Image (cartoon, rainbow, N blue to C red; front, side, top):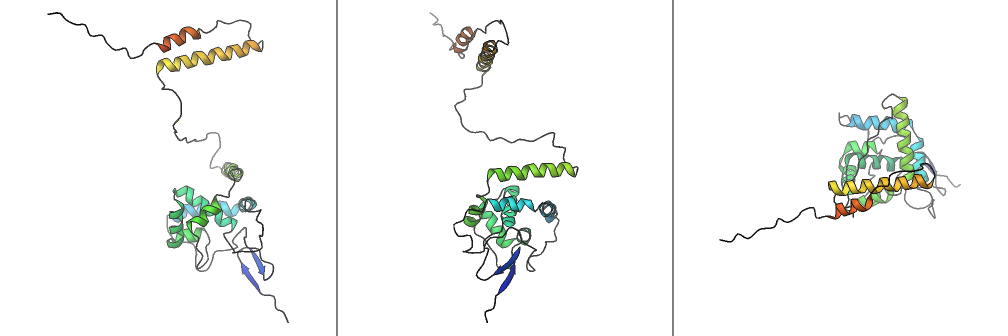
Length: 231
């Protein structure tokens, strides 16, 4: 008699001969890694509540993991839910992949948040390879859903956004007063020309771009001339 050996792992029942190596959700936390009782974990617990209320988040992440040549073979791997939670912790705490790996090994709170089982660890290269597979469109869907959720529960109205920027080296000229004024004159002249070409304005006083350019081209830091004094 042939026996079918089944093992309940994560989000489904795995049968020998028909294995699904990567799951979408972890059904529950391992007995070896329960919720940490610490005030610092309170913020992570609030994140968990949002993730548990939106199981579709893990489904969206799962779509980025499709396309494998042989999805029924290989190691079990991280679940889509674990990938999303690992990416959230990395970004929220500004960790490197190496620091995230150490947290998965050493921190009970991190292991509890990722629902890691006993003896379940992932290297920094594995974490990077998995998290990098999250598509920009998936991040956009997650962000939009979070804004709608915050609006529904009354946390945020969504009328004001906060944007961060990173300064990079570019070929932008030095923003002096004369150069900025010349840029404004050029821009105004171009816009008036566009309006006139579309017959939206009949006449206008053309901006004197030639005079502005000549004024801008004059030496801005003239060297003082020293006069010789005859004794």
